[in-house]
Length: 88
Length: 171
Image 1 (cartoon, rainbow over the protein chains, first blue to last red):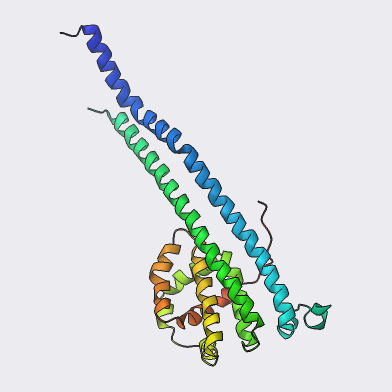
Image 2 (image 1 turned 60 degrees about the vertical axis):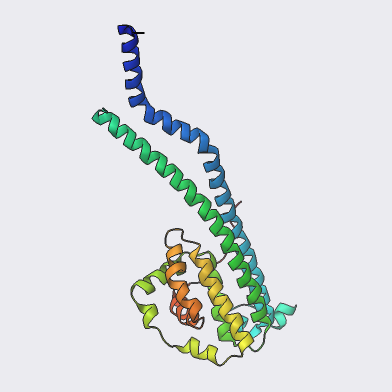
């Protein structure tokens, strides 16, 4: 079986198109395949970071209160109301 | 054969894909690091509760431990550690007032304080994804051999930890 000149032309055009468009098709394919995973990982990381910052702020506040109650002298030194004020 | 434009296009595509995979790997690693940071941070607050209630622990040491709380979510301590390590300050440090003060404490209180120091240092390294692993690998391994050295590191870093009000972040 011998290819006609038109078939040869088409094959050559296809090879050339693959060489030119191939990389972008590959990028698009990888993007579609992993895109959602990437976005989910990004959201998860952001969520954890914010949660950690909020948890830290909350725990630091509790620690401040605890220190003011347990260490009135230290609280007075740091300008916080400690001792009898904290009990009230 | 590929023409020059086609070669460039394949190269650009390869770089794009590599960057995509790289950032995905980095994001997943940071997510795991945040989880590890939460564990170290919890340990800090748990031990701080005991330290604050223990009347034997001197007020000055409690103050130092408390001021370190800021470092748990601040990248400053990690950066300072690297600078101190690169400039050789860590290697040269072999004694200071805080360390001497700790030597006078009983073993239980001392182990609590060192737990706070080490957990703060470990947690702060997770704030920086690029140099954090280097600090854990090269700096903190020095401290695990001699935990008392954590006091030297902490006292060196302490002036750089200015106190700031803690603002919650919108979820």
